[in-house]
Image (cartoon, rainbow, N blue to C red; front, side, top):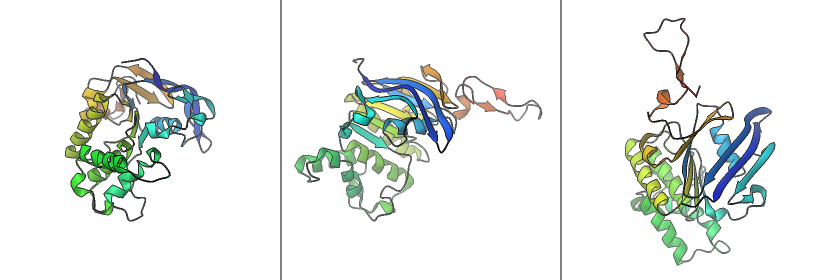
Length: 256
């Protein structure tokens, strides 16, 4: 593995409305790494990845992609982004193939699809186990199938960097296992991956590093927590049922 940085955040601050959400984040993701962003709801995980792709403006600090300032970066075909699960077609009637094909547009000339583009779309559908639903309307899909389509759309451009915002949220176990295997295939071919996760789940064996956020700050950057589940994350506060009512939350480490 080379040490070339793919994502660099230096002192990044961001606001939503007038509320500070990121308070000086430093983060480097190097080529070939799989990095999980962990933290409680509201800790700034999704905002952090959205600053990387330019959906949230930064109020201070620097963001770089592949060594280029993000505002000057143009090679977006190298980046695949899977947002938090939404309606894949945005309410517009569309087939599975049409949605996945939209992820290939950055690689085409003037939006014209050639044989290689169609093959890339087909391969992406096969990777996520949705080739048999290629002609179906996305409106007919289950939540887990929807998520697979969004991931296939991100894979269609054959990206060097894959950014995924809670890809396992609300997804059945069978789809989680398909997604974990899909991700393993991408890692094996050398892709760099940044994931926002609520818990590690089936992806745990793939994660090289965990970055834990709390209140918009990096609290931990290193080996992932061994135990799985929100209650096992470092710093999760909870009241045990056998604890006295006035005992307050039990603090278990880094996250709250």
